[in-house]
Length: 251
Ligand code: PEP
Image (tube, rainbow, N blue to C red; front, top):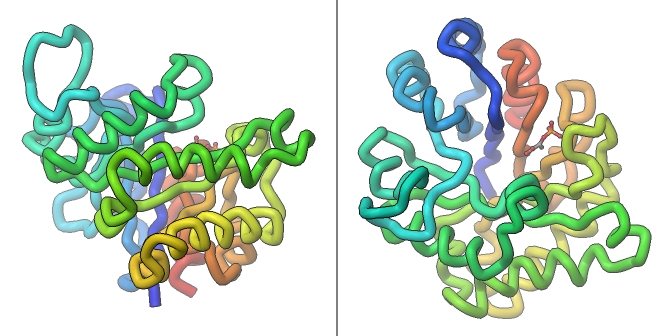
């Protein structure tokens, strides 16, 4: 039995004032005990969120980390070990916005994944196909290649301490959601790919769905056998909506 997880990706949103409001809203939510809840604010707001959520069982993560695990001469980057020092426990790796807009390829994604783990952060590896790739019937191949880039370089066992998020690019921030069946097909394929190398581990890895998840769509998605929760963008900026999604994962 896998413990569900709901993670909120706040992206490049927030000011100190709006983050304070969001923290206040989250502190008022009844979060289900059986669900791991995490939020990923911008780096600037990590300390504010860690301090503001004291007493609430919510993990705080970063949206990215450097390819180097430890601090050094790399202007503008943040090392995984610095994130640990800032009391982060998780980090998103390979979000599609970084893959497409910042040209992060599989090699960089794999190095960031390794850096995160070596510093003690739990990576959330994001994978997913574009609309053109889906329409060309390449969804499973694209996702398999993104996952294989990590397993071939680092081995499958790294997923004992990692989470995978399947996020179809065409569903991110568009209001379009993959149907529960479309998402389940990809989640099952991801699990099967891991199972071919380590069946026990594959049965334990949490695979989240991301792409315009809302409270109204969450229960149906999370009811699928291989969907273990969600990575939520836009809806995580509304504490009531995010709380309702967390509760859907616990029901
Ligand atoms: C995301 O960017 O990780 C995401 C899932 O965004 P949204 O929920 O807004 O589609």
